[in-house]
Image (cartoon, rainbow, N blue to C red; front, top):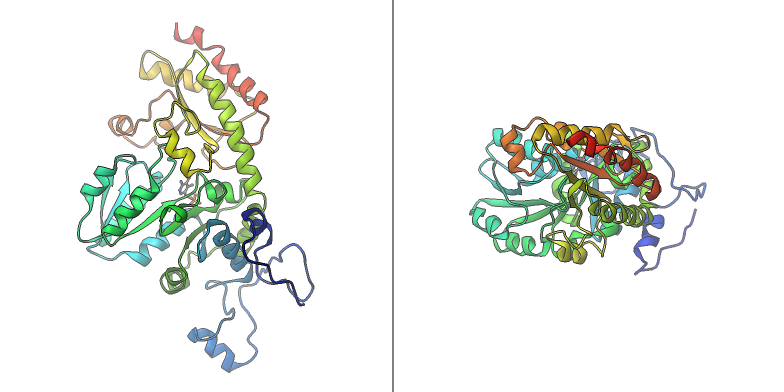
Length: 408
Ligand SMILES: *Cc1c(COP(=O)(O)O)cnc(C)c1O
């Protein structure tokens, strides 16, 4: 089947629905799902060349699969990187990156506000293999600089962070990393390439949890690393082949189709989140709202520059209360009074999700660690979906409206 070659300089919206491997001989318009673990070889010589890596071609799906290739090409086109490689989960992508870049004696500088499992993987698990990590303030560039050592190989940040939506300056971190001969990796889960493309600010590697906005409908687990062809092909490809954190073809296909609507979902969910955040800021029971799209956010200007003018879909807010017990009771009351939004710990879904970080994602921390991280018992996270904002507001008001009685 001969197919059209895409012209250069297409808009990102077009790339999101077009970039994929060529259609099969049947000419399917929607990308095919290749559920196969092995691939027929035309002859023993070709097979040998493919295994030796001197000829392209599929051999065994732990190494690669055409559906996974379509997902990788489309995501790379959207992020603006030369290449991408799929992983079984977001954490699988971070594991692949660390296995590829780090060895015993190397040093990493990492934001203290990173996703909890990322901190555990790098700080604890890689610590066992002699990799040292310094955790620094998300927003204080001087702390990042002071942490650099001759052995520093990697700076790793995430922006905005979960749940307090702290924003870091990607361009400043990139130049710091490069001045130290290190790479900058950015976890772009919260904004996705629809709102933020870290390579445009100098980042070397982008980590994705495809489980969140890339799928966007809460269906499958997936992950990816985006970066230069050289790193993807020579460093990370061999890790996937030997370590096996391979993205399943079915999951790749679901996320591939999710990417087609990523742009409109992120715009709509971001607009909904801004409306809800603005409304929450005016509610007397709410002490503080954390959302990069609000002028009250400490890094609002930076966020608007880095995030294509959008705040993203996640916000957090803190309730008033006299003591930790009182604010937790208030937070639980607001969460338990909802009848529409989902009580869950996930995010990145079309369904709005409400979470109490203090007893879930940050529940295993000591009270001192939680306070250092700024996670109070009165904090509620809302990952805003495509529910109508009037229904979301009414749902929150069910609990907020009753709080005066609770606190007095
Ligand atoms: C969920 C998440 C991850 C991990 O992704 P999984 O697909 O769950 O492994 C990494 N980073 C951020 C910011 C996340 O929200």
